[in-house]
Image (cartoon, rainbow, N blue to C red; front, side, top):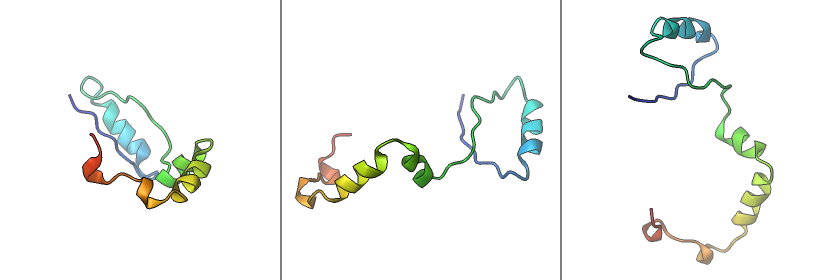
Length: 71
């Protein structure tokens, strides 16, 4: 089973949903929402803009390089 996230143009969304309904045994719509850019999303989180502004003021020497991150 696979999960796929799509962004569907407003001009075809009704036709696309109609098509998906014809595969109701094979495809399930798990969630629907309006598209929001990354910037809009981050700005919608209370305190996020302030947090980003504060992080920008931190000196580079406080940072960690990618090779030091523990993934």
